[in-house]
Length: 546
Image (cartoon, rainbow, N blue to C red):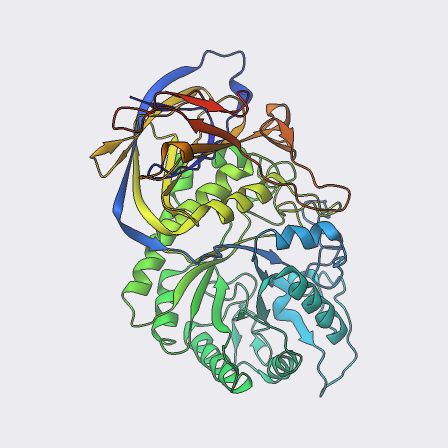
C-alpha cells in the first residue's frame, strides 16, 4: 500500500491516476523529534459540490495614496490606480501569466472618487490627506488620461476588469453613519459611456465598497442599496445597448450580514449578477498573533460559517446571482510585513481558496495585486511574493468542479479536491498545519479504490505538485510530475521561494520564471497493487516510487 508523508505544508495532487500535488513544510521542527501518524483522505468523485469560474483567481488594485499609513508604517508607496508604474515589465508579465487574471479596481476610497468625463470637465484634483474626512482623505478624481493608460495596460495584459463605482454620490451622511437618499448616477453613467465609446472592455461594474450591514465608516440600508443596484442594472442595459455582451452587475462589496444580505438579494432578483463579500478574519495587521491564527485549524474553520450562510441565502432566493469574495487580505489595515506578504500566508490563502470553492464561490479576489503588506507583488520592486506562485499554481492546475473531500486522522490536515484543469483527473490540496507531526496519508476515492503507488516524505517548508498518468494511459506515457516549493532557509517569514531547490525569480527582462516539474516515469505494470518501478529525472526532488 502506498502512502503520502506530510509535514507542515500544502499539497496539490492531481489525478484519477492523474495527480498534481503541492505541499509546504515548516522547518521549525528541525532539531525536534517529529512524530509520524497515519491519516486518510476520502474523495467523492461521482458529483461536484460546487463549480468555480475557470478564472477563479482575482486580485485587487486600490486607490490609497502614498500617505496612507497604519500603525506608523506607510506601506502603499506608488501602488495606487492613480500612480502605479504601468510600464513596469514585471507587473505586465505577472498579470499576463494567469491568462487571464481578474482585477478588481476598488477599495475604501472608491466611494470618494469623481470621474473626469468629456461632458463635465471640472478640475480633476487628486486625493489629499485630511484627518477629519472619511477614511482620512478628501475626495479624489480619476483623470480620463489615466483611465486611458490603465486600459492600455489591461489590454496588453489580458486582464478581466471589475470596476468599483462610487455608491455615495448624491447621498447625505448622517451623524450616526447612515447614508440616505438615492444614488446620483450621472457621473458614473457619463464615465461608463466614455468607456464604451473607447471600446474598453469591462467584465463587471461593482457598486460601492463596504457600505452594507453596519458598514465601515458609512452604511446604506438594504432596501436603498437594492434600489441603487437596480438603477445600475438599467444603466448597464442602456449604455451597452446593442453590444454583443454586457458586463456583470455586482454588489455590495462588503462584510457579510445575514439579514442585510437576505433583504438585498430578495429585492434584486432580476438585477444582480454577482454578490460580493469581503474577508479580513485574522484581525488587524498589528496583531501579534496572526501566525498562530493562520496555523490554527479551529480558527480557520470559523470562516466556513460565512460561506455556508451566504450559500444558503442564495439557494433560498429566486435570484440567480452567484457569490464572489470581492476582497480578502486576511489582516485589515494593510496587513503585516513578513507575515501577510511572506511564505506563511499561503497556509491561510490556499485554505481560503479551497474552502470558498467548496461553498460554490465562483471567484476569489485577493487584496492586493500590489500595495500594502499583503500584495502578491512587492510594492517597491514588483518582485512576486510567495503567494503569487501559490495563486499561479492554483490557476494552472485546479479545475472548476469541486469534489466532496474529508480527512480523518488529525485536525491539522486540511483537504480539498477538484477535477483537474485541462486534463483528466483529480486535484487534491492537502495542508498540514502541524510543525511537529509528519502524516502518512492514504487516499481513497468513493471508498472503493486506494492510491497504492505513492510514498512521500516532505521536508522543511516544502510545496510539492505531483502529476500521474490518467487511467488507460500506455506504460510509455505513464509519468508523474513533481513541483517542490520551499521557503528560503526554511523560514516561514521568508519572501523568497524555491522550486525544486532553485530560487524563483524574474529574469533581467522581468519575465516570470517557468514552473518546471521534476518528471518521474513509471517503468513497471499498472495494476491495483502498485506501480513497481519508476525512474526520476531528478532524484533530489522526486519522491520515492513504490
